[in-house]
Length: 319
Image: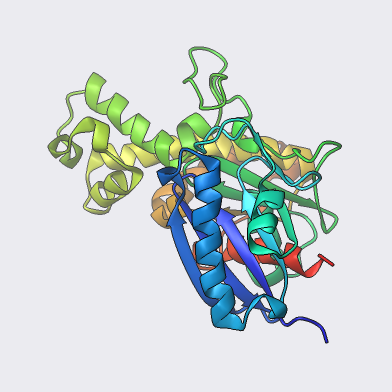
């Protein structure tokens, strides 16, 4: 008899979320651990395995689980490794799929976290019925999952689609976690928004609710909370972030002419604070032949669900 469930794991720079998923895409049992609490990857896998065994036992044991799918930063679908991920505690090449499989006793497949979100969006969310779209994940970093003709773009080595690391500022660009300067991620991630806030507070004298906070502790949520209360400086920070994203999106459209660009992740909760400047900037910078053709959408799935569901879809393919 076909095993009725799979497990999806979404590894983020801050949290790892996992769940048991049925064939209809319902997450039946779920759990989470703090990714950043484990500088040693072996300790991380041990803690993750404990959490996985708990939800798997709730579902009826590993006999009912067909496979485990993992979405992770710099995850390589071809070899099951995380390779030199700038936003994770472990910087080397980690054979994570094999490590998890050895601990839990179930086959594991792994892909890039943004690719997992794209699979989830295509199967259950805003991209249902679409063959050409891009999912942009706005979290600790900026990730992307590119679908062309109904297929994820992996490239020859499994790493295609690192749109968060296109260079947006060639001169005097910010240092990015990847080691280069001027990357989109350095400006448009949650950490990039907090960085913009700190820069503005240092070089400007505007009154702002953000001045009540210790600069080093400011997060993108603090900036959002201030903007939601009408704080002019915080609103301007989102304006700048949206403008840079719009410039980048205009270039992405020129590459693959997607039907839609779908925003996913914590920063996307900023809603119109981000979407309005993105739309304005994207259309301003768009090649004329593409003007007005690409929809900008927010994910229709709960924040962690798209990546967990997308990752879980890999589990159905395992034998």
